[in-house]
Image (cartoon, rainbow, N blue to C red; front, side, top):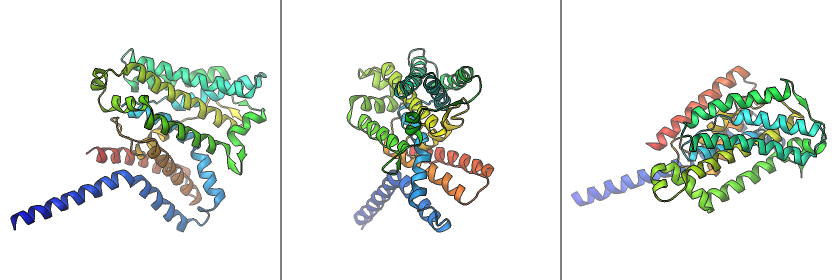
Length: 324
């Protein structure tokens, strides 16, 4: 009898563990599907193709930022400068375009500017051993300041049609930013899943000291991680400038919080070492569906801010529960 009781208890514990594992793995997808079902009943327009494409277009900028932020948070770091980098990259690329520089070259320079900003963050974090929070908080301010200095505080109007296409064009009736976002996630998935660098990112986040003892060049890899975040911030800035038809020094305000929330909602742990890029896109979709649903329900913008703030707190709480 006692043996049978132990067997039943072991079976119950195993079943409970399996349920918890399934919840940890698929909780974000379940939440997203539930939100879609609820909104489809509350707002008949939600499931229309045009609205769904609009959701994808709206999340594209945050999703691109969140892809870079995933690399950073997987190492146990954080990048608060992504929103400011969006503004700087947009301003630089549009300024060059206005001066007659080829659109592709102008956008490339804007993206490279973002990557340089990421390199500075990575170098100060990895080599100078400064806390990532402090480093990126400082760059959050000075990068935005450079954008204001270059633009004199005014938006710079974009006229190049090719540049505009990258932010507001369509291919086969699908917005261009959606294709760019998809390409970013395919590349990021491949890097994290199938490359040595991706494995090093997880190892550093899991235990930086142990990773160093096994021969992983922690400093060099951290610099690469922040450069990726800066590069994708620059890409997001170029796409946003094409969407807004201008380079604006005020662009990207608050984007860093949305990107972090998308990453954490997607299952990446704040402490590093755990998470997936596919989880991040689900987190970004949750943020986008929430924002779109609140707009369709005609919820006051101020209340939308309150709700989004609550979602960010909920994301951190979910991370803590997953960790436990």
